[in-house]
Length: 77
Image (tube, rainbow, N blue to C red; front, side):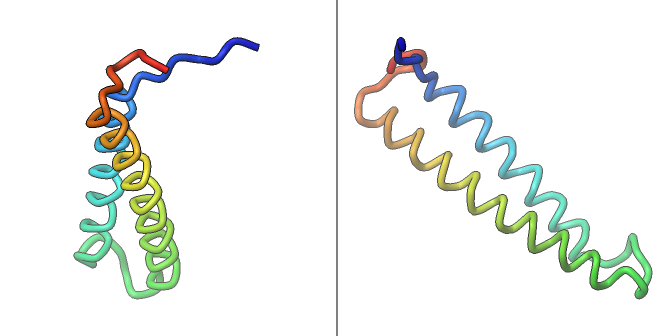
């Protein structure tokens, strides 16, 4: 089985984009102006999911940035 090459630049960009998307969703939902009081439990669940996903994105972002700073270039293994 051949080892796949990793594009760390793309991983950094993808993780950063996803991090921003989830942060935007949290920001909108925490503003509270788009939903009624009957949706509070659901909104809180969505916020928790988004924050957990932000944490995962940040870990992916950090790992890829460390790989780049250690001399790996985009497209290298």
